[in-house]
Image (cartoon, rainbow, N blue to C red; front, side, top):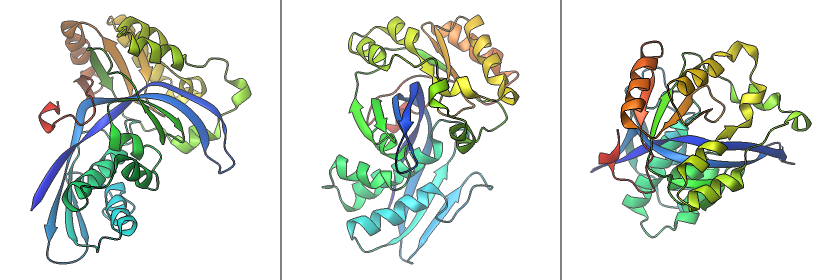
Length: 294
């Protein structure tokens, strides 16, 4: 038997750092949004014990340092279900090391697939608690849609869907190290913080322009000069009539919000000439079907 799920990419409409926790992590407050750029993840049950990972990207790890394999192992450990033989296939379309939770979303898809096949009675909260052991972004990726994420990212509150719009997503060729950025966090030096409460209110009001005025990521304030291309992409998006532009996660991917499809398509085509990993996407809600994958 083979079953398949989409693993949706995410964007940060806001990202704020509130403080350092005793466990060494940072307290965060973020509004997260799923988009219709996705990997496709499938599991096939096999007779021989063990977990095999197959992927279209040869350089990805295939042992339990890959979040998809780690998630499968944890599922059996936490549920007490005897391990069975699995082949996990991940067809990657989300750029790697992009700040869009591609790996986390793959792990979340594996957890949802295993629940569907082996433990359909398992509540969402239990699956999300399990997901936190895999990675900080994984509980949100299990849930998807539009959500406020707090704590390490595991304290989730559903928000109304982002009003219909078009999202141009552009990843430059270089990666940014998340630990490197967190090591540079100096809370007293963060002069600007996103109005996450105001953005949440705009979502409740269905006010896209109110959302766009409040899109903001504090990590942009601490980017080393070697990553100044992030700012250049933002400026290009705004020059191409984006209503807002922002880096997502710890970068380097930048997205622009557009209200007009033709303008979004034109911006996407123009940026793709310089940045091949540029995508025209739309927001998706929780439990979106696979045919929504752009």
